[in-house]
Length: 300
Ligand code: UTP
View 1 (cartoon, helix red, strand yellow):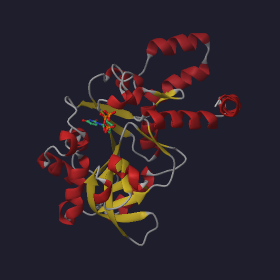
View 2 (cartoon, protein in one colour; view 1 turned 180 degrees about the vertical axis):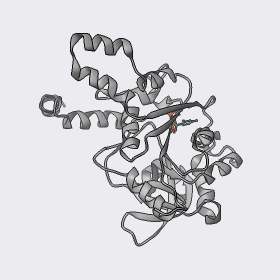
View 3 (cartoon, protein in one colour; view 1 turned 90 degrees about the horizontal axis):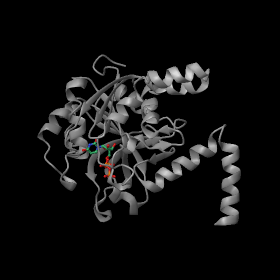
View 4 (cartoon, helix red, strand yellow; view 1 turned 180 degrees about the horizontal axis):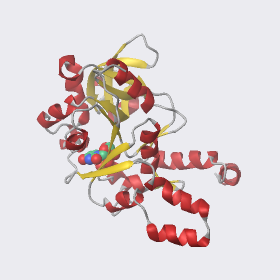
């Protein structure tokens, strides 16, 4: 770590989207609170931030923010009831989320896009580099990504995005990066970015997934960035400006992720996440796997 590239300590988790793909479940509940086995999706994301050394977490919330705040707060009534019963195991599970990190909240108001959600974090973040973890993007804890991105930022400065190779037919669902090799395995230089391109115009099949390490210069750009695709202020558009001119906020690198990742805001991926994580659990896995095998062979 050099002095000009300070250590990162803050994580920002945008969780203010409307979650329309998951209606009606998300009518009164944020999609980030939907359980993945027995933990809300957002808790995995906060655990990941803490695991990468970022224990100051700012959540950008919108309407229906109460369940998010309550989940990371103490619940004295429940704790009291569990201690009275002597149920130490469940008490520990209840306390896990409130002891995890130093949580802060800011309200986005109107969901004007991911770029706008990140801009809401500017007063809290200040002039330090910071990480952004999308609250509906679940990275398997056994496949570390964020710590590698933090490491690249600390060595190279600038900003770092997470990239994943996808089928060309899927590129239109993501932000897409034009890249150059760096000589370091799994790390590329990002030379351009396009939000949800038509397949014919996609510069590559490297899709941006929901982890970023950003230079604070991004805030100045976001303030100047007008609505882009879908009428929303797009983080990808601001990153494109950074990638096009290194003088603004340093280079943009990409860390290529080859591990397990689930978009829990997508119903199919959400189901896959639950089945896979439930199968791998020591307590639930043996029974669930046996049932699943029977179901697949006998009933499908
Ligand atoms: P999505 O693109 O998944 O949008 O946002 P969405 O509105 O949440 O969901 P759908 O597409 O309607 O189902 C990606 C991430 O950015 C956050 C979301 O909460 C999610 O974590 N986001 C998006 C905001 O915080 N604010 C916004 O204005 C938009």
